[in-house]
Amino acid sequence: MKKVFIDGQAGTTGLVIRETLKKHGEVEIVEIEERYRKDIDKKKDLFKKVDLAVLCLPDDAAKETAKEIAQNIKVIDTSTAHRTTSGWVYGFAELNNSDGRQRNKIAGAFRVANPGCHATGAISIIRPLISGNIAGGDYPFFITSITGYSGAGRKMIETYETRDKSDESWAVRPYSLNLKHKHIPEIVALAGIKNSPIFYPILGDFERGMLVSVGLENRLLKKKLSAKDVRDIFEEYYEGEKFINVLPFGDNSVLADAGEIKNAYLTATNCNDTNNLEILVFGNDEQTMIIARFDNLGKGASGAAVQNLNIMLGFDEKTGLE
Figure 1 (tube, one colour):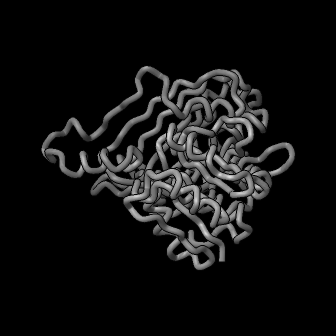
Figure 2 (cartoon, one colour):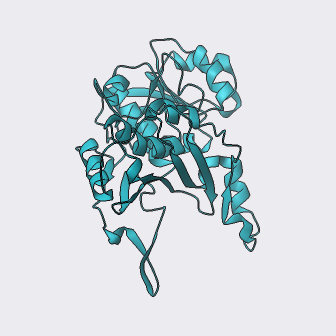
């Protein structure tokens, strides 16, 4: 039995990780009294007694806390603080590097940075295009990402759940329109692109789930490909993966039934309460639309953290996530 301490278990991500680990079976959760949750000396004592610590803290607190943890204690940081920091391994197991899958680096790491939710979707789409020499690193990527409001944390959840339900201005809320979203640096670094993409994030009026989409002009690709060809490249890239599934091209069964209008709309919530990520590809000979669908608190946060924990501690990757 391995011992794990979640620093920040009262937050949204920490709560979901805690609930997942309670059914894990191979992990003992070490907890701290509520009055000591910000007491670094008390936490330092706990860090010495565990095999792995999960940091679910704001960026600055995560940076300061990580400095207090001995190098022989494994750490997963769910904040933005260390995602592009030297010495930290990026926790996206399914990335395919020249020396193998990223999970091999995660397995031997003592410091792992959990990916951001928007970044998870963007990288899952762009990285196969770059590594497969389908699109150049200077391709002008435009990313649209709509996410459930739970990704913005506990205060935002409370705000949405107590709002005036008749106010329709809450339905769709684009944000970070200065094009400086905090996930952009990790997208650039891990997707393998040269320039910052135009990134358009949207907060939707639903709690969990998200859709991240990237459109392609096929004529600008390095190879002559149709949308179906692009889909097949993704199937090959993610072959054998436990949590990423590339759906059949042109399968309209993935679209929701909207009353008399059959198969009209794509929903964002089909992967909720799982660690699954679905890749959907639509389009034709001229243009391609690639969409990643997953739970922003699953593969986009807490689920990915538990997946990384399993890899780092030597458990089956799906333990607690099925």
